[in-house]
Amino acid sequence: MEDFRRLAENYIATWNEKDAEVRRKRIQELWAEDGEYVFPQAVLSGHDAILAGVTDAFGHYGAKGLTFRLRHDAAPDANHDAVRFGWELVDPESGEVSMAGVDFIIVDKQGRIRSDYQFFDVVPV
Image (cartoon, rainbow, N blue to C red; front, side, top):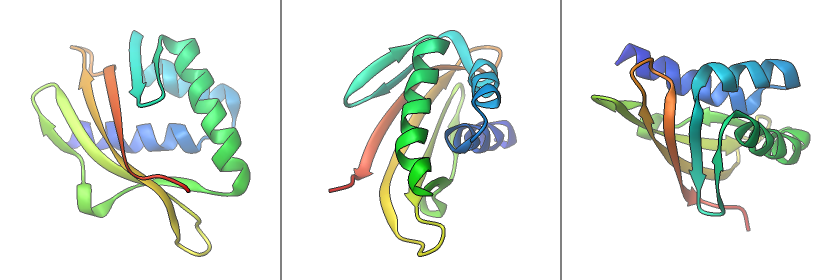
């Protein structure tokens, strides 16, 4: 369970990472080489595509000063090679939540993300 909590924390840190090279390294460490990030708008496969998606999100939300964090009401929960956790995108100054959701992740034998399915509970209007 502790490994899955660390996975969730590292996952969130990746989305908040300001340094492009550190972000790339985090993705290479977290995801399997042929891993997938699946969300309602697209399926991104492989490190380069995932990096482009995370970088795009950071450019959009990070540029506004918003940050991702784990949700306390949906803490990381593990079941064999799967983990789910809730997250939210917040304005650190006001505490206002602009987006929230849950990720369901399957890891490989090395503990790297094989599949990451993201579901949205709150989306920006």
